[in-house]
Length: 273
Ligand SMILES: C[S@@+](CC[C@H](N)C(=O)[O-])C[C@H]1O[C@@H](n2cnc3c(N)ncnc32)[C@H](O)[C@@H]1O
Image: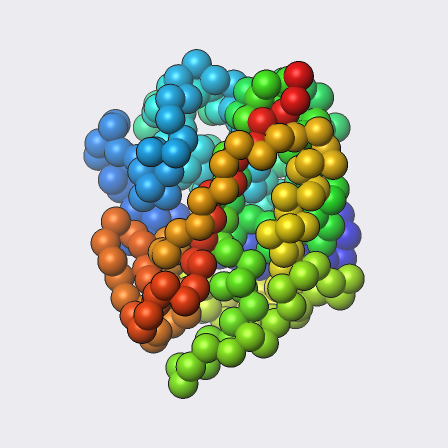
């Protein structure tokens, strides 16, 4: 575990129980309704298509709400994350809902060592995953090596343009790197992206942006073929507080001329045979 990883993991470990208890993640809806899917996976459905019977891995699965949703759609799922507290919440929800999922504790970059090479039909990731990774080329290599030939990456992620923006309430300004940088952006923020009364103490994070070209190039270098790239005008959290409106189904959009900003993107790629 790198120093960066230890700092970030402490942040995630502290937030996982608060996320699991939050209305935003809505765990009670999973318990109450065996057909319930996360808003994120529900949004994905038109592009995701049928995943029934696929051997899938959810990278950086956090508390497992999307992982369980994919299992409910019929995929045999593995969830991987480096935060033991996140995985404890994920395992608890899977047990409470009778969902058979393997949850594995590992750094993203060690995923192939832990899960083996070429074992998956589907790699699923996104919505706040890539910003924790210092080296996008190594990420592309991991994704490609986890997949069997013909296997597919499906990811919806916050757009790197969104992550360049300063969120000052008086307007939008490009303030942060678009391209990958050697040094991380270091944040010290007491809150989190869901509503909670919990007061946190592990508030420092180290994060990186990666340009869309860098992300795509990392996958091409790993022997993947691009099969889809769709940019969206909404994001499933209030990314720019005070400047976005809730447009329903868990999605948020810039209130003023949202067509200026690519909020998220869905990227699909297939491993060449
Ligand atoms: C915002 S969550 C993304 C998950 C999902 N979109 C969600 O909202 O539930 C980010 C997750 O990445 C995990 N993570 C961050 N860096 C990681 C790394 N280097 N290896 C494995 N997991 C990592 C964190 O523990 C956290 O659970």
